[in-house]
Length: 319
Image (cartoon, rainbow, N blue to C red; front, side, top):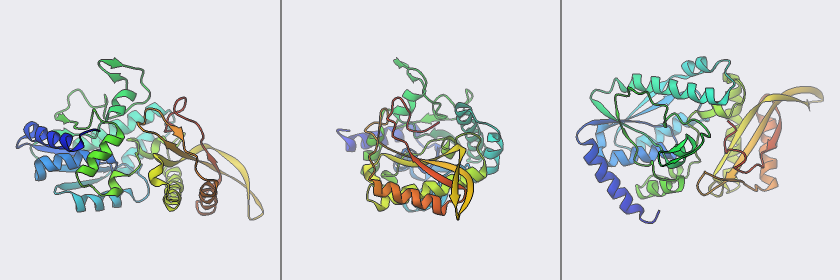
């Protein structure tokens, strides 16, 4: 982005004019897109903003605590945390199709969000962290239609009778542009540099049926991946690093006995725009540390593999 400061000033002025004295709600996910959106709106209308964080039960380890901590330190707006894990897991029970998962999570999120938003008296606007790649992957722009790659619930997933007017200040930006805006707004590095996290959360990194047990296993493995990437000083050199749990098991040996346990995939990619991407050449010592820690510390995992597929033909996420 050539003139980030100019973009921020223009966006804040535009938001003030668009929103006026009305109240606005924003879905805060913990990702950089929603955080920067919230920061822009907060700069424009301050206490007129209420942010809603829905705990779907599909978040990374420590995500809720992290979001609450960052929000209270950096925003002069109200934060509401909604506990909805049981609702989401009940809806996902027995579902294995990736697109169906995305649609179920999207619809349930919108339902939960709408219920909570209805409690915010006088709210007229809904702020979303939609960015340009979301629009492209969901079927393209009106002037440049394309095939759908995957469903984004913030693009085309909202109900036709939506009672709020949408506010999407980042919809023409790519991820790195969003990071620049975040820095210009003074958001801390832990927010601005945070790796992207999919809207459907860990449901699309938990291949096959989504269960609490599999999610808990995945959460622990994913935390180790990110910890070791940071420890190696690679976090800001890698665009995205995460774990995936497969719906398969394989034979192994532990304490001299045969075991039959789960497989974890490590996925690390490098990209400039997230439309295309290449797999990151992580040093073998780091991969070794990740593998040894996961198989030693995460109950029920005996095999770790590394994904070396670029996008395309693969996508960044596995589902």
